[in-house]
Length: 622
Image (cartoon, rainbow, N blue to C red; front, side, top):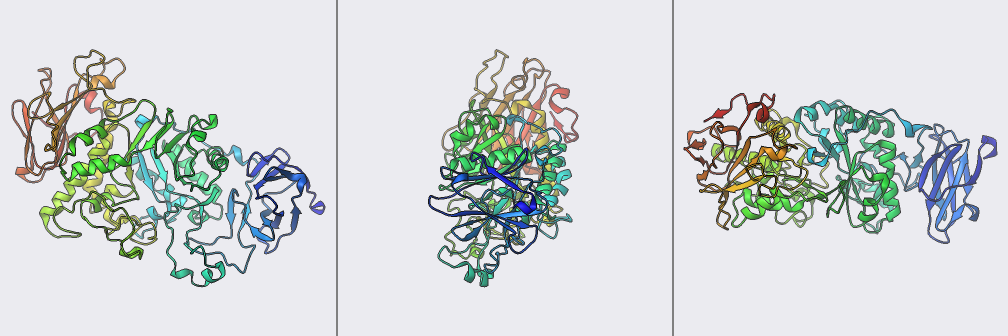
């Protein structure tokens, strides 16, 4: 190394991977006992290493070898390790080069093809605007697959399937009204699924016969942004550009990580810290048996970072991904027996010690549109004999499996999707929309499109025009939720007048006011929120919101509770409409709600309740 004016010193073993030091770069790797380790350096793009540094006992601390290389120009060099003669990339490399495009296997005949790259010096202080830091109660998540969201020919972006392509969609995200974008695995992972007992040399020859792990829920190189998701040759800069653009738009960036059971807890912590420090990521959704929840939750560096687990935890920055919400709400949506009580508990649930994330559709299971079109999974394209995917998706096809020309069924499906949208957006907790559901995206009945890097797994933007009415409805519902604090409070409503404001924060009503019909046979209920509980003083909002919910297959009568005489009820949102028999009908103190309909009624000060939004221009008042 002397001819390149490099010098070496014992490194810092506490942080795995590559970290910038004041006078050089620190390289640290964990290696099993008894292995010989060398650090290889290549001139950028060179086929063979220029320098090879044996990592002797001098650089060893326990099971970690660490060396600090001084005078290294990061723009000129790439690196690998040789462990017991086998060339291997650094599992904690900040970027990997030489991987090729999505679905391409490295050539086993070129052992130095894949190698790690370095952050440029000073990159930890990259120019960034202020992070949004949106509280959980004000958060609305939109989840996407980076490649699949813009890969379709109808996506209308120039840089399809990339971080840059997502950046082109930011104006759409703002118009929709989301506050956080969640990315499915976007770090480096091997998407070609090779049988464990198959030599790489043979797999390389028959690679086109393998399925792809399109979603990316597998062990990966957790410190490196996925190069195949980068339009440019610099995935570090491109991913940072996406995060910066999202922040400028007031949108947070949340990353999803999968850690299997074998993952080292300190490596997991280092990876999460890496993305927080180097990319200013706002939150993490962490799944898999290798997630050290307590370690992450107790880390002071992450104390203001959103951490989302499958099980929640105790902490203001923690959230629970709520699979049970989807299951219980779908049962109520299709009018299952004894489903109302669980559904109401899910809508109201909002623990003090952590947040809950609610969704009606996610990557696992049917999309929102397929949920109302299919009762059976159609996973033939996965070539697993129909054995894969969720067995009980709690879906209902409204009378016909798959596509139909029957207008009545199409209208019913549209109403059911709108009902599902309101179930999510009018519940306490953090709502999540799966990207494309707002314009009827379909996976053709596949409820486990993990291997479908094609039009089954991609979001079809060609449906956006046909489902424009649904998109507009979603926008209105999001805007309505944002205007009414009582729909997204910091803690769960108690069902009593605990602040002596004259009304309980939430109440339930059936055919009689103040008496909800919650027996097993009931599928309908009126839910009333008092706006005073959405305000700190209780005096700034004196209105009411009444959710008239009827998921029964026949019209139902719901009582309207007494409110101040000067106030009248107005229809803000409704999922029914089009035919006379499908309209709401009002009596003196009751409302007749059509079958399978949710309607949102408001009463009170117009300035408080309706704000300046334009989506209520056609309010019906009575």
